[in-house]
Image 1 (cartoon, rainbow, N blue to C red):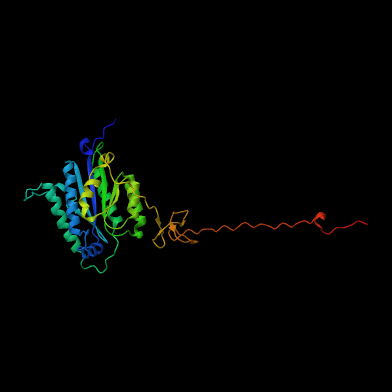
Image 2: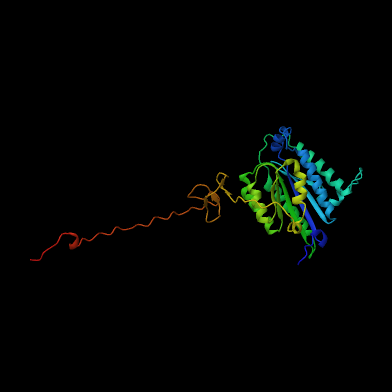
Length: 314
């Protein structure tokens, strides 16, 4: 029987990129409902994420982590702040904490305060989160680290998306391009959903081999993070994890950005439309409508047996 050796023991380095949904519209509504039971605010969510990140770093000294904040219109790196060398940001924990833990906690708190207060003068806030852009930034960071490794070295990377706001069908194409890019780079995408189900992240987790989980109780966010998303891919094979959900593979049309069950697909650029159009709005291809076949009516010959007219020869 083959033994399962965790990556933290086998010598391979691991990278975990955590994407936090910092949509101020969604968290503002949640703040108003904080008095109700089983509710959570952004500060409580950040506390759980910090404990989760520290636990991941404690598993092995070869584990690396990055934290990204996703807003309605932009993406910001919370940690590492120094993109050239994250080790330069390490500081001594004055309260007895481990240096790396103190660096991650203090940097994330400082950066997210500046990040959330920088958009107070914005004229309009969208209700959807720029999730596709945050995933693209995470993949670019993974690719940059992989280029620094020498031949024979391997970096096991995965992305954990902690999503709060609802899906935006307008990001369908960008998100699908990011998902297939992650599949090609062997980057696993895990999804931790705080509110409503996300059909787009269901597809992302299913295609890349990750885990999709909607938190049943918001008060137990830390417990679900440590139980489901802390173990690496090799350890998940021997653990009792939540069963897989039924994936919603509906596509979004290119004309109205709505999810559809049945649509029309362009044969040239594979664009999807909810209604028929003679010209593709994406590649401007004009479709030639085939004419229906013309059937010639055959004249019926009357025979003498059917009572038709007869001629006699005199």
